[in-house]
Each structure stands twice: as C-alpha cells, then as structure tokens.
Image 1 (cartoon, rainbow, N blue to C red):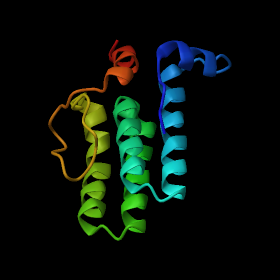
Image 2: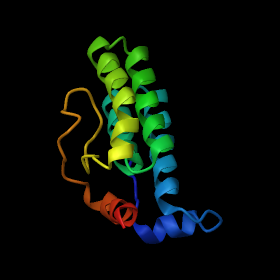
Image 3: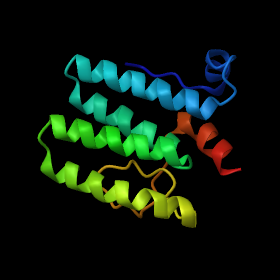
Length: 132
C-alpha cells in the first residue's frame, strides 16, 4: 500500500477541496480501511498513526483519529491500547486549548502522549502548513 502524499499529488486530488491537510488525512483513513479489510493489522495501525500526525492541529480531526484508534483497538481486544486512547481522548481538548501538541507524535498508547517524534518526510509539508 504505497501511499504517495507528495504535495503536487494532494493538490491535484484536492482541486475541489481547498485543504490539502484534510485531504491527506482522509487518504490515510482510506488506506487504513483497506489495510484493515484485508487483515494487514500493522499497516492499518501505520495509517492511523499517519492520520494522527496530520490531524494534531485540527481539534475534530484529532479527536476523530483517537476515536478510530480506540475502535480499532476495541476490535482487536487490545485493552492497553483502548485505555491509552481513552486517556488521549480526554487530553486532546486540553492540548488544543494550550497549543501543547507534540509534533509528529503517532498517538499510540505505546508511546508517551507528550513526546514529539520525527515527522515522516512525505508528511512534513502538511505539518508545516498547519504550523503556520
């Protein structure tokens, strides 16, 4: 599931929509659904993580990414991930209000909710766009 998120491709895909970050987010969610449907659990999580990175500065998208992570964890009966996602769902509004969102954080329960992480190269233009 190669995901080509170069800005030129997103600009073309979003010619009717004027928000490339949002378009990239929904492309990641589409890839997540595809991976989940064919049983590629690791790929499904990877696409949810990438969607989370894109969504961090958008309150409703950010909440949506954690809601989807919780639902996927629930479907996998992963109690650790479920509890981690519930905590993150509670923290998201505070992070949005204070502007304290760790850039690049993948949003999973296995990583600290407070530590910035490297942003994948192909997502950097979108994260930078949202930072400005």
